[in-house]
Structure formats: structure tokens, C-alpha cells
Amino acid sequence: MIDTLRLTAEEAIGLLERREVSAAELHGAYVEAIAARDPELHCYLTTLDEPNGPGIPIALKDVISTKGVPTTAGSRILEGYVPLYDATVAERCKTAGLSLLGKTNTDEFAMGSSTENSAFGPSHNPWDPERVPGGSGGGSAAAVTAGLAPWALGSDTGGSIKQPSALCGNVGLRPTYGTVPRYGVVAFASSLDQVGPVAKTVRDCALLYSIIAGRDPFDSTTVQLPEPVRLPDAEDLGGLRIGVPRELNEAEGIEPGVKEAVRAAIELATGLGAEVGDCELPHSVEYGLPCYYLIAPAEASSNLARYDGVRYGPREPGDTFREMVEATRDAGFGDEVKRRIMLGTYALSAGYYDAYYGQAQKVRTLIRREHTAAFESYDVLVCPTSPTVAFRIGEKAQDPLAMYAADLLTIPSCIAGLPGLNVPCGLSEGLPVGLQLVGPQFSENTLFRAGHVLERALGFDTVPERLR
Ligand code: GLN
Image 1 (cartoon, rainbow, N blue to C red):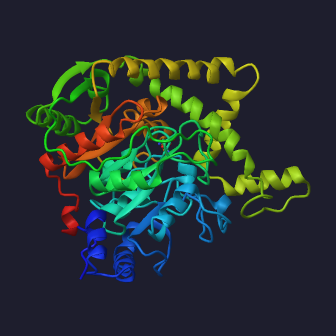
Image 2 (cartoon, rainbow, N blue to C red; image 1 turned 180 degrees about the vertical axis):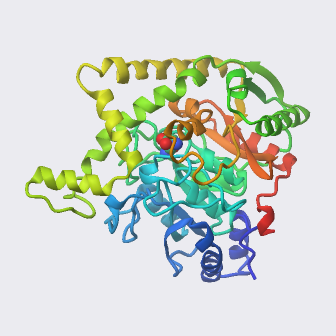
Image 3 (cartoon, rainbow, N blue to C red; image 1 turned 90 degrees about the vertical axis):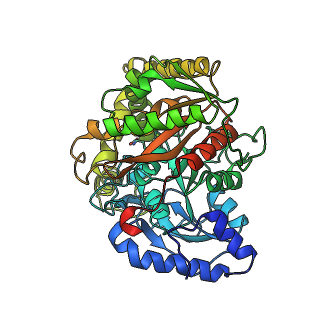
């Protein structure tokens, strides 16, 4: 019997290498786990029962194009769409031998923080199925926590890898912008979108990052990594300078239990040899959200113009071309997507462009600069990943602003193009709390080292109590 709940990717690779299991048995064990637990959790939109690679399995968020396998981005407007090609990240997983288990649920076009905006219904948090797994990549995060995939890929525009990892109690990396190819990934906001790994351990996360990262001729924003990815094996934090940005640790809305778990983790870091000090990111909390909610919808309104009933998916009838496009977009997009298209179109319209989009780009520069300044004194900045633990399904669904606030602490580093790692650091009210580690561009190896040492010292059990 393979215990998929506890098996890490590294252990699974070991089992295969020692020929203790076959790739088919491994794939089969996850398919069985999916059959047993996914009816309750709804992590997957599509599953592949047959093994299709010689290596260990993987799940991909349903915004990643997979040749011959439906890709919906959680939207009715892409229902029935089967890509003719693989996204570069999917192809790199194939080349590495990984066997695709399926495509995971997401908020429609990755817009949301709970998966409740998925046109196919929400995913559920394995720690408490009445609660959300976070979003938009809640399907990937919940699947890893519930043993329905050893690891998975998500995509993160303003927090969609880090926040679901925090709410589900696992490890998630949003990589440095430009290190992972976006070719073939359904575009939300192109200057922010980045694909990254979700896993049970920091080492697994580093390993998966090494598979997907690196320059791609099909994505001109990608670069070669300045240094190879190192699997972390450090045992202390000697020499590491950790900054604690006051605004991100004391922001309004951070639950006391979250603050407490993060504070304890910071204290632990001091004991492990890190030098810890305070710092400031004065504009990040106050202006991060408004800046993001102009830039992301503006880019989305342009990216989503391609869904016109001609190029992809279903089509609604109409007497003229215009009526057909309107009817298709009206029926195919959900409320949140329409809200973003309207916001973005408005922010980009003549006469308002400078006041909204142009101004937001200036604020983005400010936020980037204040991060650069903080990294003159520190190697890593820490704060909670999410201000709250997993909230109840339905609790914020009718209140877009409350939902947007879930990303208050993940958004600033995304705007600045910086890498961020979520490491589970404890429980509050019986639910996981995530610690966010942010570093300068291309500092993934430093984040892995710090995350690995902390993860071992914290000893967080990634298997939810109710599944143990
Ligand atoms: N929750 C944020 C949003 O709704 C971030 C989503 C994401 O990172 N894809 O835009």
C-alpha cells in the first residue's frame, strides 16, 4: 500500500529508483486516492486514469495548456476546449518523465482567492471541507495536502500560489518574474503572471522549480537562471539577515492567531542563527491592493478580448457578428471576470488612462524601489502569507473587496516581480498558518535554504488532523 497522504515527491522518486514500485502503480495509487477523496474536495476538473510518463505523477492547474487534455481556466467560455500544444511548463514536466494525473480547479481565469469563482464549483479545504482552500490555485494546493498528487503546478498573479498553500498548509513558490515561461499558460495579467510549484516540502518545491525554470525562446520575458537551483540541505540560518517589515506584520485584519504563529517562527529563526531586524515598506500595504486592482484588470481586459466565440470554446447564436460575440461573452464569463473586464476597460480608456493605469504604474515603481531598499540591509523579508486562516465557503463570496483583501500581504512582492515562498508555520483555530519569505530577484536558492531550515525546525505536519 502506498500512503499518498504522506509521500513526498522525493520519496516517490526514491521508490521508483529502487524499483520498489512501478510508475504505473504510483499513478494508480493517486487515481485511487482521487476516487476516494475528490468527490468531497473537488480538486480536479479532469483526471487521467492511465499513467503517461515513466516518472512520478503531477497535477497541473487548469490554466496550463495540455495537448489533447481539456484546459478550461475554470471558465464556461473554454468548456470543451482541447489545446493542440503543450505550455512550455507542461512540456518540461513531460520531458522530465512526469505522469500527468489531471488538471486542477481554479477561480475563473485565476481571478479570486477561494476557487468559488470557478464556473465548475468550488474546491474544499482538506483541513475542513466547509472552508475554502484559498485561490485561485485552490485545486492544486488542496490536491497536494490531501495526497491526491505528490506535487503540482499553480500560477500566481497576485498570490494564487502562496495564499492557497498557506490556507492548505503546504509549501508554494511564486518564482521571480521571468524565470518560468508563460508560453501556453492562459493569460490573466501578463506583467504579473508566473507559474510555480506547490509541494509538501521545500526540497520538493526546489526540485520542481528546477524542472520548469529557465529561458524559453517562446517567451521573450524569460531569462536563464543566474545560478543552478540547489536542493537545500542547510541545518542553520547562520549569516542570514531577516527583515520584518512592520507594515506587513501589523496590518489591519491580520488575525491574532496568525500573528502569533508568525511571531513564534521569527523567534525560532533567531535561535537558528539568523540576524533579525525591523524594516519598513511604507507604500506596500497602503497602495499595493489599489495598484494591483488597476494593473491586473487592465491587462486582463486586453488579454480576455480573444474569447469571442470564434477562436475558442462554445458560441451563442446572434444575428450579427457583434450580437454573437456579445451573447457568447455574456453567457461564457462569470460575474467576477465581467467585473474585471469593466474595471480594466475603464482604467485604460482615453482620458482616464493617465489618472488610473499610468498612476498605478508609478506606484508600482515606488513599491519595487522600497523593496530594493529593504534588501540593502536584509536577505529575506518575512510576514504572514494570508492575514487569515481558511475562511468559510460563502463567507466572502458576495463581497469582492473582502475577497481582494485576502491578498493584502502577497500582492506587494508580486507587483515588484520578486520571488515569495510560503512555508506552513503552525495552526490557529486548528487551521494552517503560512509564513511568507520574500527575497530579491533570483534569490530562490536563499528562500529554499531559509524555508528548509525553518520547515525542519517547525516540524509542521502537513497531513490534516481529520485525515491522519
Ligand atoms: N486573488 C487575486 C486576484 O483575484 C490574485 C489571483 C492570482 O494570483 N491569480 O486577482
